[in-house]
Length: 412
Figure 1 (spheres, one colour):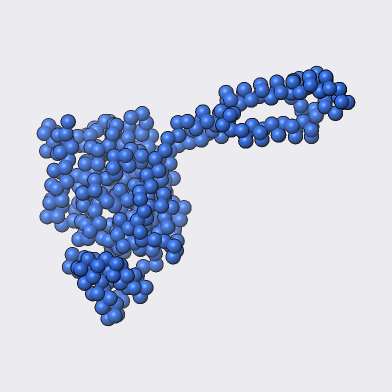
Figure 2 (cartoon, one colour):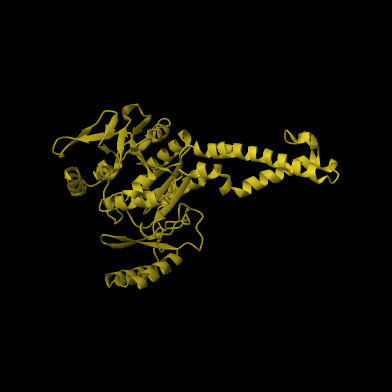
């Protein structure tokens, strides 16, 4: 194991003093100096620890990751000096496409297209007389008119009439490329919070790559157990499919400060797809389980998941639901319309731990939620987020979140 040089330890202690005095500018400058020496300083409940700087860009906290509309300037293996640690305002990227076909079919709003078509017809007429528009042979070709003004006027009137018929046909029939664009399937991204257990991460990502065509967007919290390093390897192995962000901040459920709700909302805002899929690394696909979920997102359905639950009377207990409409979706695997999730405010900001936070998020979504149940080709390995977390912490944070769930259930 690499031994930390004494002068780096001294810099880290100076930074800890600056943080205690709330001198954030000095603390940030010292952090950068430590990084320049090849080390990362990570804050812990007992103070700090120093780890060797990995071969990828690492941002200090979840909140510092810049929301760049989907392009990861902090992408593993691609970060440059231009990357900034100053967070930008959320890029909500909310737009409506309902008027695209009408706009594309309106000749008055597409003058360049009509001009191109008319110029093409003129060029075709000059290059290939035998392919002139039907009716032009009634008055003869322009080079045969010999300056006859009356015949030239007649020819022009017939030519204009043929063009107007073609333009009328264009205005009624949308161009083929517009119809194809309207019928295009929604784009989909799977969001993963990486909080350790690298073997689980590797199996989860490789199953996604092998059995679907979705993009994968991952947020690594503190390179726990070397999971961030494995994530970087997966980015190199599948550069067109996997995109990664790394932060030094560690997950709250493992003794750090990064909350589940904050991390999930960051992934949601970094995404630009139509559909955002929430998935845990302990969830493994046995087939394409994503397409059926996305297929349910029609009409007023805003979320579709693997496992659904419903509350009993009074709301103090939730039970597994049969396939169909449900009140809550469990965070093992579910798909949501990204714009609807953003409009609802994202994931609960006060949720430091996942348990019950998925229910809280479900209750804030508009529209209908559905679950597909056991027929979906997916299974779960050991649920680390539950079984490998301190039981006292798990119960305390679960109750804390559930108080908010009860409030939502009882709201008018």
